Image: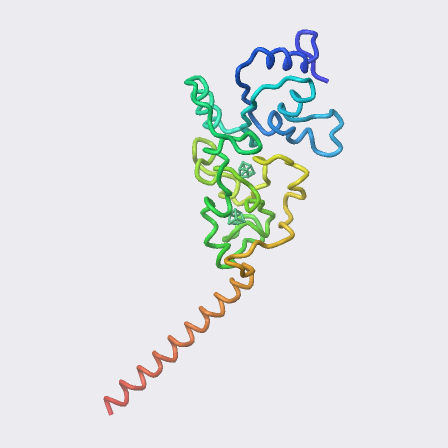
Length: 226
Ligand code: SF4
Ligand code: SF4
C-alpha cells in the first residue's frame, strides 16, 4: 500500500530494523497500529513490534504511543538511548517514566471531582469527564502533568474525555469514545455516584445543623437581652 523509491515500504522498514541496535516507534500507529488498525483494518495495519515479529526480526522496540506522539517523549528517549541508557519498559514496551502511572488514580487534577461524584454531562461543564466517556481509569500516560502544545493543556483539560490513544487496542478498545465505561470504578469500595450523593446529603445535613445552631444562638442572645 505504501511505496517509497519504487520499493514496498515494509521492505525499507525490515532492512533498517535488521541493522539497528534499538528501534523507537513514535506515535500510536507505529506502536500499536493506531487509527488505521481499527476495524475492519483493510490495510492490515499493525504496530512495529508485531510487524518485526512477523518478518522474523528480533530487535528491541521502545514504544512511544499517543496520537500524536509527544515531542518530550521522543527527545528524552532518543537522548537517553544515545547515551547508552535504555529506559525501563512496561509489558507493552513503553518507558515507565512516561507511561508508568494510571492517569485516573495518580495524576488527573479532576480526580477530586470524581471522588465527590461531580460529573460534567456536556463539554465545558465543571466536573470529572467520566460521564463524557473519559477512559482515564484504564489509561497509563503522563498527559495530565506533561500536557501538550508547549505544556499548555491536554484533552481532559479542554473539556474532552481521554480516548485512550496511549494504549494498545486504541481505537477499537476505547470506542465509542463518548460513552462512559460500563463499570463506574469505586472509591474505597464505594460507588462514586453514591459517594457523591452521600457527600451532598452530608453537606445538606451540615448546612441544616449550622442553621439550627444559628437560630438557637440568636434565640439565646434574645433571651439574654430580655
Ligand atoms: S474519569 Fe477522567 S477526568 Fe475523571 S478523574 Fe478520571 S481521568 Fe480525570
Ligand atoms: S489524554 Fe488520553 S486521549 Fe489525550 S493524548 Fe493523553 S492518552 Fe491520548
